[in-house]
Length: 322
Image 1 (cartoon, rainbow, N blue to C red):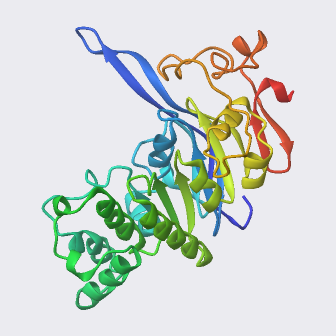
Image 2 (cartoon, rainbow, N blue to C red):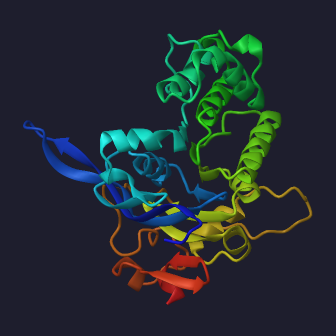
């Protein structure tokens, strides 16, 4: 692992068992994450993109230990996170924070938002109680929340405001890594720009991001590195310039062709995928994308593709690269 690597994920696997029958025996498994590997470097953002159900959120939660992995390795700043005891993991917790996709479900309905943002600071001994309110108000202001919001409860906020509370709660601990799961999807355009600019400023201060999103335009603006997921696997990853400028996997090309173009005279070939993504409980044999791929061959239906290195830092899981 190089000196600038903050988070290294190797061969990560997470399956969720399926049970059925009178005795409730296991009948199968949802293969949410299958052999996923990537690196997040210090002061940089990795954008994890893909359709709903591709496994992006499960990756983020498993990386942070909210789900126990079935296989693979997650190393943060040289530490194997899933091998640490509770005391050691607690000491590292302030450095790894998560912005949840569902802000209302992540907030205690009986706790005022000022207390919700500040409770972790007290729990980890990062701020004396007499200075807590001032510290929390400063973080809230950076996320577009005013002093009048400090004593309100979560149900008194709009969805976008609750998302800002979740972001403020993560930022309060001054983490080294933030896993942001669709952090701006519930915000209006003006607040989206504010939060994205805030993330950009934090990167300048050395904070790294695993940015999970379906909004490719935001990912292109914010993230230096990009990984594309399909049905539990990363099918292409590389720098922003490589993935957006020279996409090699058919699925990546289809996603990029759907990005709206501001210039009405600009021409872009639209790649329309047929059908729906297969169930992760019963993924296709061979290449998981072959049932929807316009370039699929007989080999794709029977042989699992390996990851090919097409350029420095640019990897593609596809038979077309062989």
